[in-house]
Image (cartoon, rainbow, N blue to C red; front, top):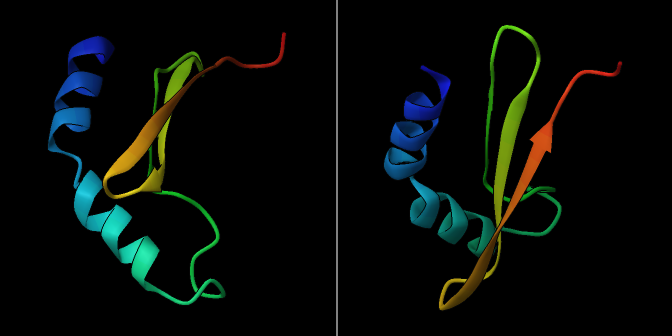
Amino acid sequence: MVKDEFIDKFKNFLWADLFRLQLDVNENQIHCSPSLNIEDDKGDGVFVSVAGDLDEYEFYVCYERPIT
């Protein structure tokens, strides 16, 4: 089931480690925030990204669907 798979991946994703790495590198090395994207066979999916600072961050959640 896609919902359960997404919840497991979200909980186990190394958000803090990747976010810390992003904040500590030169701006020319990384051009996007740590993100998790999961799609089903139909092309519907959920995209989650984290942005901000280590002590004050927010998640962006987007729903993706194929062009109809």
